[in-house]
Length: 291
Image 1 (cartoon, rainbow, N blue to C red):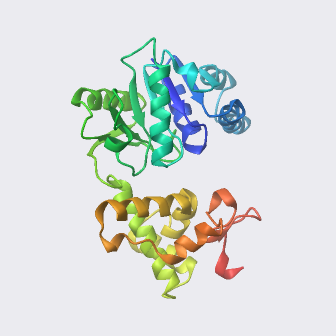
Image 2: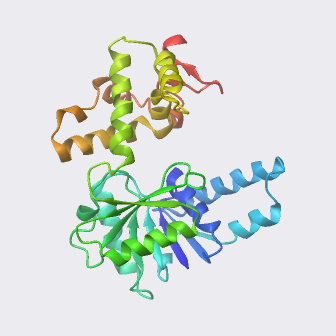
């Protein structure tokens, strides 16, 4: 099987690695809008392997075998892909434009499956106007490690496509959960409002950052507190998902906390910018309210 991954950022490179590690996959096309972006995604995978090799946790020959499957380039290299997973920005217009372009790219394999890694957007809307139906294949970060794949069926997604993607997910060593299209699907419909509520609790002065995270870890046996988790996901992603759920449902309980919106506007997005609810700039995690 040959797989195309569109978008070489954190999720895209992780998804490409997950596929490249699968024995059933022959080639992984890791693509982006610029060659250097695609090469950067591949380099990120290589860097992770190099660290594991240095610690004696991975053999060089195993890393070389996996890396040998990953080919970088622009979307047009995916002409003979059997499956393409889009992992572009979580913006509807960008995703729709991406699949429209891919329709013109797939010439050698018209049976190629189109899948989107969207975390909250409508699969039906993404595929609107396209002759090929779209299926959701939502991985979780870090994609090579996390076992869950949400397989989302839109209004026009054939049952056989859903079943095929579930089979592919199992081949990757993942556990697929079938989801009927709804804003936020399953995990983010439950998880992201919890993070948003934690931001409200902090903004109202109920407890400090460390206190909220400690309470949820020890009181609910969560491995990570909600504010730290928000930083890890990216507060911009958290906000985008909240806005999608609110727009789709019209329910005020999904209103994003004003503090969350303010932090995103200030580019305090969490780990990826070095600061969110915690400051990561010194190499150690420090709550911003205790700096």
